[in-house]
Length: 300
Image (cartoon, rainbow, N blue to C red):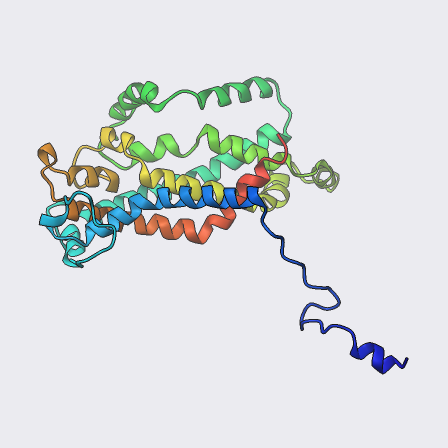
């Protein structure tokens, strides 16, 4: 048989795949279908509040409290969003306050947490392990326990009702230090030994060798810190007293009015506007969050 005849019988290989054969699709078994069904039900349960928020934000005031609620929009009151922005509360200014506090808090934590995490992971000093245990123990202390002494400190510094009363206590944190330590532990010791042999001190090794290799961890920590600060309500409700200094979550609660007499459709429209920035941040950066958290769990 000629070579031409043999080659004519070979299956065609798709362009761009080289000599690799297409990978066959795996068929789902009974357990796979059950998993898909459970995940679908869970996804619907998580999306239901967001759907209710959007549908209610587009309703008129007289239909906002309909029971059972309409899950498919039948009316589109787009003026609710302008009413939420131009209402009695400075919603855009409160949104700026949240963005300002979240940005500076994230920037500060991205400076302090990697340095502390590198020290706990790669440097040897007296009492390192005991200090790290105390650091982890602080994660179990709720903020309600420390809020009174923290409030007294901020009052003595005359920082009450200013953004700095929320920024300064949060520019470092036990979770950020722990997360960055886990990342630095995944780096091979040979890199640090080679840097030491080349004459680099601890700071140069940290800045030029270790820090560029944990960019996934920095991205994950920055995004989680920003989202946490943006959504925080307890601390801002205590340290910020005036409407001009209030953050967005505090303003959304104040929109309920006395005895919850506020308009539900306007409140849902304001909530939808508040979710849009963080939703975009998460959708764009979810790959870095997942890769960062999974990488940090490789070595403990």
